[in-house]
Length: 298
Image 1 (cartoon, one colour):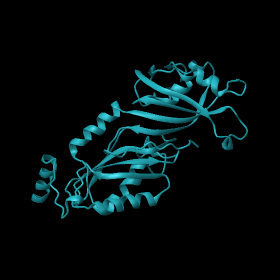
Image 2: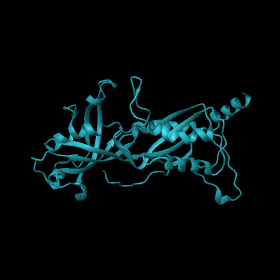
Image 3: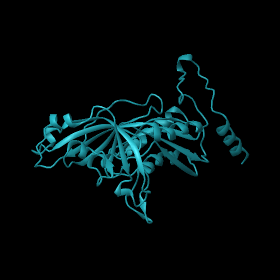
Image 4: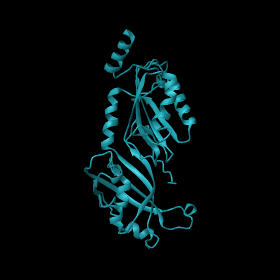
């Protein structure tokens, strides 16, 4: 018990841990360096999600589990075997819908381990955890797994409201509407658009009805790949950058005019969304973990 109290006191009150290395060039001065053992029980990283049937956390409604597993459970399983903790708390910079993929450099996440039995770990051990997770499934991959100071959780939480996100989607317009790619792009505004979004109909059963102001920018249509079109030219790739908290699906089809303006009202015809990918979470956390990967929606 004394050891646990002392260790917790160290974790709560010291934000810097001195690392000694035999050679100066082995020292990594990055904020979350893991070149030598540390005592923290907080971890950060980014995850990619490639399935359109996987929730971020266990999906349970009225006591009934809807899907077999979740991103949280997939990631945490290898940690249980190594660090032997009583409980764990999962944090993330927002969440995507079950049927939305998370591509690019991934979504920032963090774990807080409650009373871990193992508190000394190495860079190599964390790389082995990454490898175990990434080889266990084709649906989830993680990267940039590293140490977290408890105070750094503030950056993650602030990012939920301050970050922007880049999306790519497959959209479809009615077959009797004659609009070319050039015509569609000609209708899009060149500057930011401020939206008025009421809580979407699809989530009203669990969220209060509220009005939110959100901005979107960099709206662009692209041709849908011919090899995937099955002879139809009614599908397009649509990309945009949004403020945190924007309901993208509802911006596209309007949600019974609960989102104004909508892409539907901007181009002047019905339009619906068939598939959605988060292309980038524009929050550089852990530092240096972002890239500009550009995956095709499928």
